[in-house]
Image 1 (cartoon, helix red, strand yellow):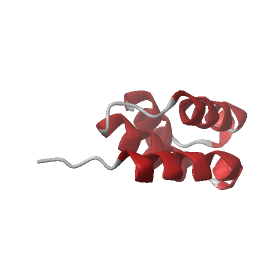
Image 2 (cartoon, one colour):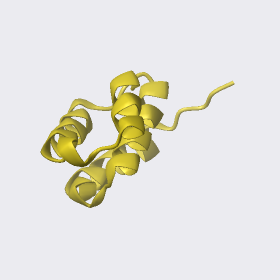
Image 3 (cartoon, rainbow, N blue to C red):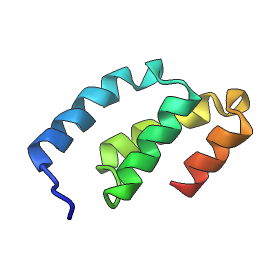
Image 4 (cartoon, rainbow, N blue to C red):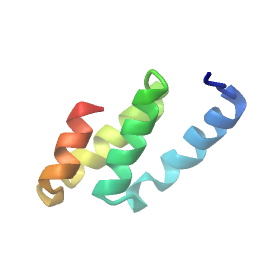
Length: 71
């Protein structure tokens, strides 16, 4: 059984976007994977994760890249 509390998830998403530049490769991968398990992040968060990953793509290790691609 899975319980989804949308107000909480919306709050997490909204508070993550301005701080996404602080996330390292693992943080980005875990965030993307976690939201994928919930059937995808809201579009603004997905865009922020994508932009942050692209900005540091050369610094991401193989595990982070594969986790981001899988998510």
